[in-house]
Structures are given as structure tokens and as C-alpha cells.
Image 1 (cartoon, each protein chain N blue to C red):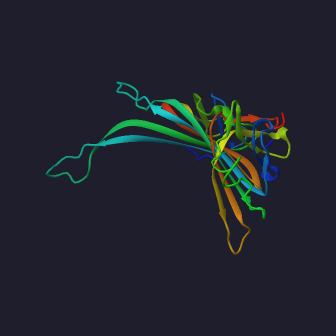
Image 2 (image 1 turned 90 degrees about the horizontal axis):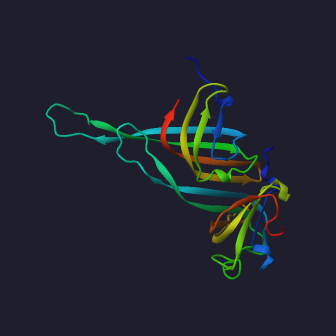
Image 3 (image 1 turned 30 degrees about the vertical axis):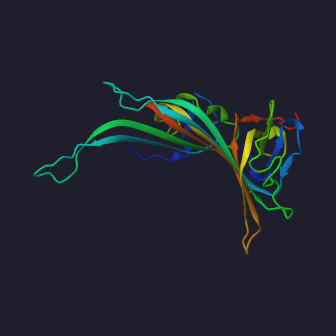
Amino acid sequence: MAMAHGKSGSVAFAGGGSYAEVVSWSIDATADVAETTAMDATLTYKTYLAGWNDWTANVECKWSATGLAALGALAALTLTLVNAGATIVGNGICTGYGVSTDAQDVITQTYTFQGTGGLNL
Amino acid sequence: MAMVHGKAGNVRWAAELGVGADVNISHVLSWSMDATADVAETTAMAAAPTYKTYLAGWSDWTATVECNADDAGTEIDYTGSLGLGDDYSAGTTDIELALWFGATEAIGILYGPAVCTGVATSADVHDVLKITYTFQGKGDPAFVTNDPFDP
């Protein structure tokens, strides 16, 4: 399979916000583990069982319209890798919205999401 | 809608609807506003699901404004009306922070009731004096395209 450049990706969140000028997005999925290591005559490495999975996502955009309404909303978050290509979809809660301005640069806004439930690729 | 450069932004600090004197913060270098939503985990034992689940809780917001210091001193005073820690509110009137995206109200303004929780001044032999103001929101912020202090 071929590699993919991020330049044609996109973001959509059904709970509101403006994602017209996305600069970057990232999603991190993790799995908890519970250690099962016990005294053993021969084993030398720790052992574990997998527990719950979890995921969070971050989106950074150039500001073009307010995204304040997204804060606290629970809805489908769709992250598209390349235009008309594969997507990562899951229900998320928007847990963070930030706007940052600087006299030397374009205004930016950022969103953070806490996943609730599974992810689908 | 178009992107916006930050060079024409502005910050105003005033009691709503003209109560007291407005503070138009001078020499702003940058401002930022961060809103967050708490979540409460609802994950419970289940035969099939593998991902944690949550419900949204309380939201919160803070803001930071960085400036070159004016030679008259800090524009948000350490005491008194509209000063550090002033939690003035009477009826529906609060002290509000208005963060302007550009030179005109039509470009957009983030504003809301707040308390100034920090006035930090720093001096360096090689640079202009700096002041950083920090604010704690005390109610819902809003995005508007009309001046909240001159509707």
C-alpha cells in the first residue's frame, strides 16, 4: 500500500464548530493493561491482560468562524485521511476549545475531543 | 468565511453597558482564550464493548492577554474597581472581557463575564517591559459580531 500525504485531509464534527481551515489533526487510541505478573520459576518478563480502550483527538485550524458551540457537545467525529479516502469515525465529546491570536500571525483555534465508545476505520 | 490575521485585534475590559470606565488594554501582543468541558466516565462492565464511555459535565474558560507595558503603569490596577480580583456584579451587570479578532466588530468578538486573576509585570535589560493579564471566566462566553459594550 502507498503512503499518504496529509494535505487533502479533512475534519467533520456533527456537534458544531468550524473546520474549514484545518492545519492538522491527530487521534490517539490507547488500551489499558492490567498486570498479571506473579511469582514464577521460569518466566522473566511481566505479563498483562488487556483492559478498556480509550481515545482522544486534537484538531488545529486557522480561525474563519467561531467553534465555541462545539464545547460540551457529544456527536460523531469524522477524520478523513485523504480526500475521498479512508476515514476514522467515532462519537466524541468536545472537551476543549481554544482561540489564540498574535500580532505577527493568523488567528488559530484548536479543539480537543474525548472519545466515548468505539472507533471505526 | 475568510481567515483573519491577528494584527488588528484588541482587548477591552469593562463592566457591562457602561457601568464604570472601560479599560481598552494598550499595546497588546497576543491574546488567547481556552474553554474546556469536564467529562465523567460511565464505563461499566460489559460483555461486548471495549471502549470507555463518558458524559459531558461542567464547562469552564480562561483567557490570557500579553502586552508591552504602558509607561503609565498597569491598565488593570492591583486594587479597586475593575482591578485585580474585583468580582463586581450587581443584578445582571458583570465585569466582562471582550477579545476582538480585528479592528471592527463585524469580524468577531469573544466575550464573557470574568475576574482578572493575574497581573504579571516583567522587566529585562534587553527588552520592552511586558505585562501578562490572566482571567477566569465566571459564566458563559459568547461569540458576537456587535460590540457588547456599545450594542
